Image 1 (cartoon, rainbow, N blue to C red):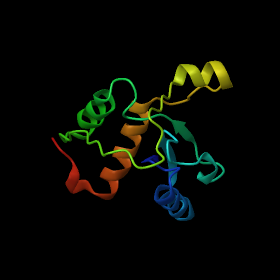
Image 2: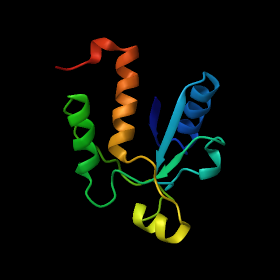
Image 3: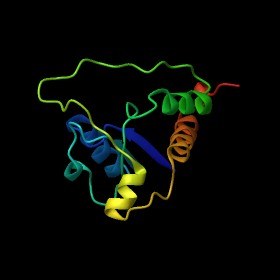
Length: 127
């Protein structure tokens, strides 16, 4: 079982990932690297480069809602000074340019993370 950590290459997210791995929890980082830095992700922790704001913004949120049974709306915050105007992440482009191939898709990661959460918090289960 792995935990999906969005923003795990950011300053705070990287601390969360390190704490989880120190506690022998497996983590997968999902980050668009707009402000995160890939080198912050500890060795051995998979980094999935992507953003819920790329392309179809709602599809990842819809998948999370369908898997968890919760209805959460996506939120957006204003850009901070220094943020790039636009960041695009594409699994196809990563495969073409870097030769990387994902072993799991976003739905697999969400399902795994949610299963782990429910094991620790069974009261969160929805029927």
